[in-house]
Structures are given as C-alpha cells and as structure tokens.
Length: 205
Image (cartoon, rainbow, N blue to C red; front, side):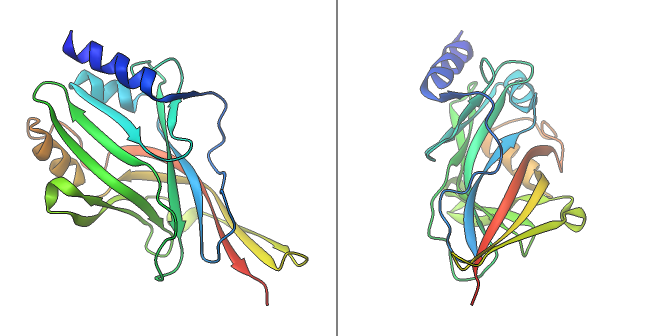
C-alpha cells in the first residue's frame, strides 16, 4: 500500500509529457548545451518491481512519458547538460532519484553531466560523501556520427549526435543496490538505462 501511494504521489508531482523529442537544447553556449535523456521503456516498472521508485527532481522539463512510471512502457525524462570542454558547465539539470519504498532509503545522482569527450555521464552522489562519479556511459560512442551545421550569420556551429545509448557504468549497479539496501545482484551490472540525442555548440570565427 505504501509503495502504491508513493508511486501515485510521484506520478502526480511530475509533469506528464507526451511526444517529447529527446534533443532540445535550451540555449546556444560554446562547448555545451542541454538535452533530454529518456529512460528505456520498462526500466521504471522493473525497478518498481524491486520496490524502487525512479523519478526526476528539478530540470525545466523533467517528467514522465506514458500513463505513469509503473506502466509497462513508462519512461522518465531528464533534462541534462552536455559538455565537450573542461571549463565547467553553466547549466544545472535534473537530479535522478532512486527511492526504496521498503526502507525509505534514497540515492541521489545530483546534476548529471554528459561529457562527450569522455563518453560518460558524471553525477555527484551525496550519500557517497558527495563524490563525483561516472554513473552512466555512452556504450555506442564509437558508432555515433556527427552532423555539423554552420550558421555563419549567427557565427554558430552545431555538432549533433543522434541515438546515444546510455548504460550504468561498471560497478554503479552494485553501488546503487548497496546504498538502497537492496540484495546483492538486485540490479545487473551495465544495465541499459536511457537514450539521448546530443548537440554541442561552438563559435565560428
């Protein structure tokens, strides 16, 4: 009953989104942008079967695709910054929250950032001494093809990559399970997690 009630609160609290496209940068900033990542259909249902609720906190357009996160094809959408530089990121996106309804333990992946150069998504985990950890990886990074568009009038170059596949980085599944108090092996290592289209901006001199 407790788990169902919490699921309902989360579903109502998030914004319902239908037909949302994965890539939608909010502003052109040299070396970085923002995008949406979408969890794979069914991931949230699998997690809920283990008593774990996955939801987004913050982010201008984070929300749910489908009737609810418990639906067979339910998906969570996250607003995440992208960078191809080492100069830092000006944006803050969605936090990813895992909540274990059996023991009220939670795990936060705070401000995940897609690093195209490294092929990883790094986030800060408050429950692990605020360590910055590579939580996801782009498993098909070598296969992604860049589509470059130059807007000489605006002196802006966009470099887009479509169809990035994101999986839990090695060892992250065990960390998530441990911090949530789940049985060992409750989450498979390297679990396929989400997809995203990503775009970087640069100046044309």
